[in-house]
Amino acid sequence: MDILNKINSSDDIKRLDQSELEPLCDELRRYIIKNVSQTGGHLASNLGSVELTVALHRVYDSSRDRIVFDVGHQSYSHKIITGRRDMFNTLRCHGGISGFPKPYEADDDAFVAGHASDSVSVALGMAHARTLKKQNYDVVAVIGDGALTGGLAYEGLSNLGGGSEPMVVILNDNGMSINGNVGGMARLLSEERVKPGYINFKRWYRNAFGSVPALYDANHKIKEALKRRILPTNVFDAMGIYYLGPVDGHDVAQLETVIRWARDMRTPVLVHAITQKGRGYKFAEEHPERYHGVGKFDYLTGELPQEKKCFSTVFGTAMCRLAEANPDIVAITAAMSTGTGLDAFSRKFPDRFFDVGIAEEHAVSMAAGMAKQGLVPVFSVYSSFLQRAYDMLIHDISLLDLHVVFCVDRAGLVGNDGETHHGVFDISYLSSVPGMKILCPSSYAELELMLDEAINKMSGPVAIRYPRGGEGDYSDCLGLKTSLVRCGDKLTIVAYGTMINTALKVSDMLSAQGIECDVVKIASLKPLDSGCVIESLKKTGRLLVCEDVCTEGSIGTKLLALSAEAGVKLSAFSLNDLGEGIVAHGSVSELMRDCGLDADSLFDAALKLVRDKQ
Image (cartoon, rainbow, N blue to C red; front, side, top):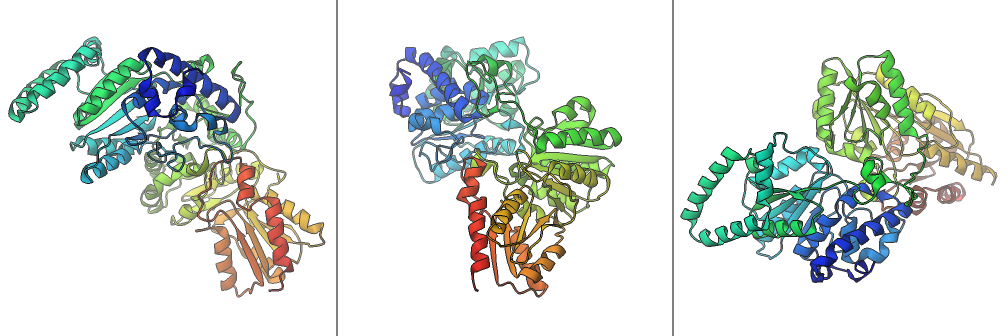
């Protein structure tokens, strides 16, 4: 830590001698590994981007220049370099620093980043703003780790290449195939293009002839024609973006030289850097997918926590069983086969498994085509990632009432990844899709039953939403109907999903005070089976709803409207949810407490309802 302890900003990086850069990278890696082993986080991608980040800070000043990270799970070195070294042990912890870039943490974080493929578009917008406002700063987008499988990235690149806005795109390529047809001559010429002598010549050439536009343009056209004859054109050149690379993404000196040259070209440029995911930690190098996102682990042995049974694994097992009996079932995922529990399905039914990359819009439209032609597609996707495909849900699925099953994983609060990953908006946006049915299991058994029903007995689009992690004490299976699971006459408590565990705990706490309540569990959120709730409200006159979603479109607001339509006059009610739905990072239990959704907070709310005279 001799060098790292001196680094608190981009300026400090620039003061280092070249001989200090490699040791600094080693120190950064050790620091990341040791801390992430205690907090959990995205390990392999960050280990692969250390030299790239150091080179970026050698060229740019992140307090003024705009470095826009894509996804953001390659930004740990950036956070450490920009004054957050001593806070890094709080990474992803409640009240600590986020695992993703967040402008509210530091001016060095140019933009929020949690989802993929938007960095080029965001950075281009910033570059346009700079030019129009006649300001002086540079803009660079750092994209990679699968983000180029998302269509938005190509929309941004197409728009960038169609103009002349000075901007640099860094492609952090840690395993993607960019150019399929690269021969020996192409590789040799590519290597020549990033040598210092070549770059110095290019700089001299531009300075010498750039002041005579007609001469420069004529020579440039001849040079480009010759290059196209010798070197196969890649997609970036074809878009109008000057391509530099491939560059060794672990050679800081070469990276710095190429990035500086790209910046000074004052035109759209893409630097293609080849990096190794998990670099410097043998366990992550050998199994980068296992060490992509990790919980706490033993950094000396690399031993990861044992995987536990959870809703995702139960879904994956059930899918294999159902697919054995129904050959029309196909599974789709958007780069999340492990996270959604589909690994076993992919091995058992490789011809019926489709991983589309980080391309949720495409996944939904492809599922629509499959359904139209007689297959039964099951798209397993994280709740916050399905948000991207809202248009396709309506236009491609709903208008034809196509039978596609959406298994919405990570619904509700997910914990340490924070506001970009919480699945708290899906009920709101899925409820607005015409014809969509929404089911919410409270136990593993209910998930298996609902999946069978959705695939084999229902028609049209069906969404099944379930949380990250496992079931609670409630493990029964009461089917798809709204059910009364506790009886009383003082208060009606309504919950769904695994929130039923908290509702039952609150009921027990109230019972100990001599207050008996109805506890109603909802299984179908759309259509909303509210009859049981209305009958209970006629008896109790008081309603408490607990749900870990945003207020807009919540079940609580719908129940208020339905009770009013039924002529039920409530003496008191309390809707307990997540408000606007923007919730910071921390453990789920900590966030539930902060949001008033833990048992103690709900118990206090219930007591107030029961004891209030009005």
